[in-house]
Structures are given as C-alpha cells and as structure tokens.
Amino acid sequence: MRVLVTGAGGFVGAHVDAALRAAGHEAVDVPVRRGHAERHPSESVDAIIHLTAEDVRACLDDAYRFGARLVVLMSAIGADPHVLRRQLRAHGKAEELVRASGLPWVILRPEILWGPGDVFTNQLVHLMRHLPFVPIPRGGRRLFPVHVGDAARALVECLERRDLWYREWSLLGPEPLSYAEVVERIAQAIYLSRRRKLRVPGWSVRLGAAIEERVSGCPSATRALLDRYVAGEIGRTDRLRGTQFSLPQRLMSVEELRAYLWPARPPREQLGTAARTFRAAPSSPARRS
Image 1 (cartoon, rainbow, N blue to C red):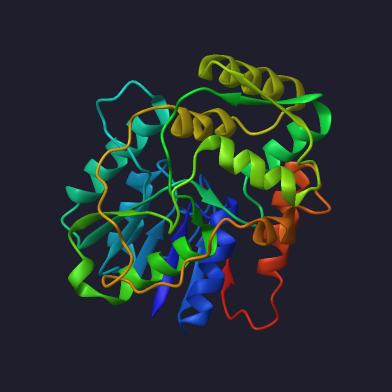
Image 2: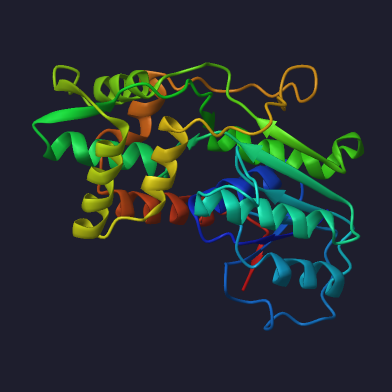
C-alpha cells in the first residue's frame, strides 16, 4: 500500500514511517504547510495518514487529488470543537472535517505520547537538571501514556482493518500513572531520584512551563501536554488495544526512559537527532518531497 503521510514534520512522523516500512508499505511524506501544491497530480496513493490538527483541508484535497481510499487522522484525547483549550478545540474541528469529507475515515486519539524525540519527557529532564527542586502539581488525573512506536503501529493497523473504519478510537497505554509517578520514573532514569519534589498548585506548574518556553524557546506544546496531565478533560475512553488490536504495548519503565534520556540532550537537539536517525535508515524505500 502506498501511504501519504502529511503533517510529518514532528517526531511522530519518523515512527510512522518506520511502522509503515515494517508492515511492507511505502511511505510518502509531506511536512505540514509544505508540499501539497508541489506534488504532481499524476501520483496516486492508497491512503493518507494525517498527524496534526493543522492543514486538514489541504490533506483532504490531496486525498481526492491522488485517489486515496482512506483518511486516518491522529487526533488527541479530549478533542472537542466546543472546549476552551485551543489545541483540543483544533483537534475537534479537524475531526469534524474528516467525518464530513465523504471518504472512508478512522480517527485515532492517543493518550500522552512518549519515546525517542518527544517533547514532554525531554522538557522535564531539562527542568530537573536546571532547577533545585522538581515541581509536582497537586491533584490531576491518572493517565495511560502510550509509547510513540505503539501509536505508530496502531495507525498502520487502521489502514489494514476495515472493521476499524468510520469510528473514533482512543489509544491508551497499558499502565495508569499520575504526573508525580511519571516525574519519579524520569528522575530515576537520569539518576536524579534524590532531587527534592515540591507539591504546588497545577496553575503554577503551567506558569513555570510557559516562562521556561519563553526564555529557552522550547516548543509551546509543553504547556498543552501539561494541561492534559492536570486537567479533567478526557473525552471518550474507548481502548484501542487487547482483543481489538493485540498490540504489545511498552510500559513507561525506568529502563525504557533511560534508553533515550540518558545522557540527555536539550529537547530540540534530541528531536532533530531522533528524526534524522529514523529517516536515515538504509532500507527505506520512501519517497520524500
């Protein structure tokens, strides 16, 4: 199957490419905000995987132009066009566009993603190394973090199984964790488990993340991800696993975290390195813009 991967500029795109190659498919990448008008209309694809809430109309235009028979959208837990949070509202509107497209579709809503090249765990490492204590928000809900490699394989499964089409799915990881438990495991992974943990209101942690982003220039997605940890908006809780998917899902263990966080590099450098590593695989048959 020839699959057009749009919005593939982030760390998820590299893992989706790897999952497509492993399943015997051909990946054709188009980074977000680039490439739609540059591709020749004689090229055809069998399906499109869109990895962002942006440029959904351009993605659907490509689907019609290149004869795609299916659109798979990666959305987010809590996506809703009517909520106040900007990112979740954008995902909700993107879902509405895909459902109204007239094409076969699947919507996958993964929980917090972690793995090589992610923003959230790398940003926490950065804070731990530069602050005398680790702020832990009070309260919050328990989450089911999903390894990005498992999410990528789930997206590929959506291509291959017609029984999953025309539905929204929530992809949850195998283990419920609080924000404090995530912080503790990351601290152990980078050998900073003795660093003092300070319980603070959730809004103050988010404010600190906003200031850190402004000062260091780190991606603004950090605050959006933190919102997901400390907020109550979760949306549907359908589970894309077990008898439905039978995916071997990785636990967010200290060993798995240490494999890519130690020695830790600055988040932006790690993002770029991870993407280049996946895209430089010698067996890749993918064509790129």
